[in-house]
Length: 341
Image 1 (spheres, helix red, strand yellow):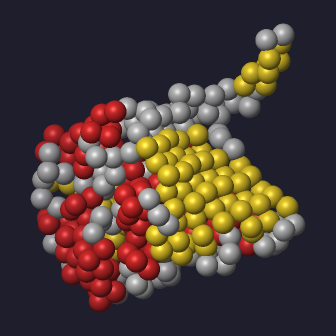
Image 2: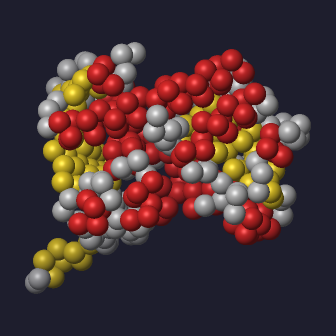
């Protein structure tokens, strides 16, 4: 039996993603214990806390001052992340932070400096790295099954756009949606992107354009190791949550398709039919949320580096800022234009 003490984690932010992590910590990660829930909206904090019989507060500082709490899971609004990171680091708490760390590189750098000085564990919530499909692709690439990769293709399409109120504060499609695909590109190829080019527009809802954002995009990536990549995004795939990857190389190709509720195929005179992809990201990626939190807990308990660190959180933001610049100026943009390092 495992008699190691459980890692006590408090969740800051009780919105949709905060509720996911609270349930995961409370019920799905044996080495973790949900120590409390904080949210500026008292009713939200109370609802989640009561569900798991833990304390709640509207002031997360109470958890930072609690010596019995080992770690903080930051699931609050993006603009609050870096302040909480710096305060949690100063309090000696290990930190799991949802993506993006921030939309501003200077704020990100200040937060990562605080983390380094405090010598605590810090993990960013790019959960798709922990998806069994994408991990298999990465494994086959690193094992040399397809030889040197040549072409990467990522398709990432949401079933429906988020509310306009959310879009206005999201940082835009590249920092909100495509940021997952930027991380996935780096993860799968194992190399950095040096230049990208964006073709994008508003094809789903004119209100998204009026809010200053885009809803449809194709991004071309050039990696330092020579690989050429493409990402295509849409805010609305009427048939479900479309998440596919293909990597083509000198010795072959590896691809993964969508998860479906079942794998039946029905053939009749009208054609070949099968189930639609899972509709919502929670259905598609629930197992990966569990796996990423398990990895964070393991990193703290065994004193090793988390698998998705601070620079893994920073670089996709650089890519997102470069993507926006590329679209605005209609030209390829090198990442060094956004951040020299």
